[in-house]
Image (tube, rainbow, N blue to C red; front, top):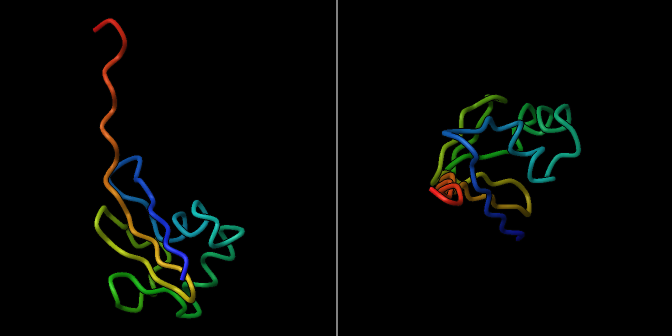
Length: 81
C-alpha cells in the first residue's frame, strides 16, 4: 500500500481536490468519478460526497493508497523582523 502524507495549506481541502493534488486521480473529473463509484473511504467509512471538507488528522483510503492529512505548516517569520 502506498502511504502519502499531505500537508494542508489552509483549514481544509475538498475530497476531489485532494485526490487530484496527490496524483491519485489524473483529473478532477476522474476524482469525482472515483468517489461516485464508492471507491473512497474517509476515516474508515465510505464517503459519497465529492466535495467533503477534509481536515488535518483525517485519513483517506482507496485501493492501494492511504492519504494522511497533516496540519498546515506554520509560516516562518519574514527575514529581518
